Amino acid sequence: MTAGSTRLAARADLDAASRGTIRWRICALIFAAVVLSYVDRLVLSVLKPTLQARYGWTEQGYGDIVFWFQAAYGLAFLGFGRLIDRIGAKAGYLLAMSIWTVAHMAHALVTSTLGFTLVRIPLALGEAGTYPAALAAIADWFPKRERALAIGIFNAGANVGAIVTPLAVPALTLALGWQSAFLITGLFNIVWLVAWGVWYRRPRAHPTITRAELAYIESDPPIVQAPVPYLALLKMRQTWAYVLGRFLIDPVWWMFLFWLPDFFSKRYGVHLADFGPPLVAIYVIADVGSILGGLFSSRLLAAGWSTNRARKTAMLACALVVVPVAFATYVPMLWMAVALIGLACAGHQGFSSNLFAMPADLFPRWALGSVVGLGGFAGALGGMLMAKAAGWILQSIGSYAPIFAFCGVAYLLALAIFHLLNPRYRPVSAGQLHEAEA
Image (cartoon, rainbow, N blue to C red):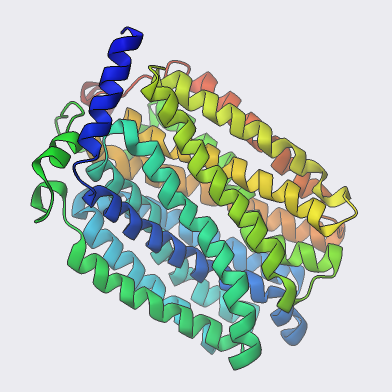
């Protein structure tokens, strides 16, 4: 393709995209769901130092709460991935958020680590549906060339949730008691459930979509639908590239989500009322990384780069941004640590935007939820191991240094394994899956 034809194709894409905005409104709804999901899972981490002091929790007790959340999340990810392949994004999201909303609000009824473990399990079961449903909806509504950008946008909701939580939770706790942090945040989920139920449709069934936007959404080549078992997917090198990538990088993100308030409290003496500014700064930086990571590869694709080269170049840049976080425990000032951790979170989110695009890039849409489910299970398994390791390290050594050292190298290791298993970024055909099934 010549430079002139590339520019004409890019302009045609832009013209088509400008004729409709329904897909971006769907993306905004998904973004809001991810925000709510992360608020609900992070309330406890912000309250951890307060509840630990009040109710006498041990480090390993808190580690067990995180461990069992991750265990339930990983197992449910497998189930939700398969379920969403069958029932679709609309019903899948309604079911998932209904389950986790009830469990989230039930946190107000318990005080012990055992009690929190018991209510965290159904919270995890529901929240496991967030990303399979979101990715299925993005696959329905966005062509390949926009997919990483759309994923980057809704994935930024994780950071917005992480920004809102340390601002809202201390204020609610100090004004109304810690239980209000769970009850009041849960009410927003109910509003979202109504909006999703009323607004979401598949593109061809949506009453307000334009012909131009529908044609743009359906511009990728059609695929033939057929069922596929997990065993057939596990015979694909592409599946393992995605699964092992999630296994290595997801624990880093979970560690930041569940332990950063505790790290700031222990290392720099930050109190509940003061968690907001450093955590907000970190996740604002992460938000920028999420969008830029997806935009970077999308721009490279628009410039005529291959999908293989564009995705991996963006992932390498993001992995390099994470490396300095290995030194976060050694810096003497809080805001130096905030800068290093913020860059790492930005790198994680940009890396994830491109890694999350891989199943939709390489697998038929009807297998997408199952592949994402396998990746989510692997990420949760890695998170379980991180939770146990972090609890043991903090209880016995009392330092975050070994944990941050792993975080610094995890993304380069993940990219190296991803490339070795998937060097040419070749799509998986329906025929290959049928052969693997035989």
